Image (cartoon, rainbow, N blue to C red; front, side, top):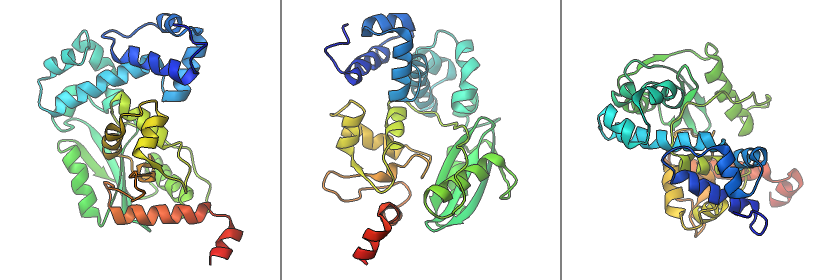
Length: 294
């Protein structure tokens, strides 16, 4: 494949599609030859566009298939092979990093996993942040702590869930501080985002990565976001990926609206979405323009 006539975005999309349809992960050299790029150039460009290397993309795609099969009740051995892994040992070597637990544990509702969480008050209601030993696994909004804890229990009914007080868990506190800073609820500097421990399909990761590039105060339609990731006919799939986001405010799916400009749905409530978008627009408006509007 000659990369010169096509844009780099088109070339990368062809590479991504080749990985999608590969049973075994193509080597970087083979993909580079297919794309007409050097291996190092392809590696950098692919990571910049999709947020992961070609090898990580292939692995994430298979883990997404594995997770879906496990949640649907498939036997672990069947799910492992249906997702394209050559052996159970290969999936167990990496699954705790991508699922936060082994496949058998995930299928059993998180049995054997340990999740720490905390809640706090925000202008949008109560906020729950949860983490496994590998990273942040949930950020949710709700009316009260009981509602939030019930959602966490539904996702991981068999996991050991431990509530910790604010100020006693570095990762949880960092997420809360980052959200407060970025949304203007605090004047403190935003700390670095801790590692994430959320399993998803490769397509979902592409959508979520694109969501993080939408500036605060701006919105995109589902169609515009689909076009931005090189899949212009996948607006409905983009909507599903937004609906599967478990990291409220960290992955800003609230910035995606319907084609007609109406807010559309949001897992954490349409009224919260309207309020949040209005707050972000006000913060993004220069003070002088705000005074004229007032």
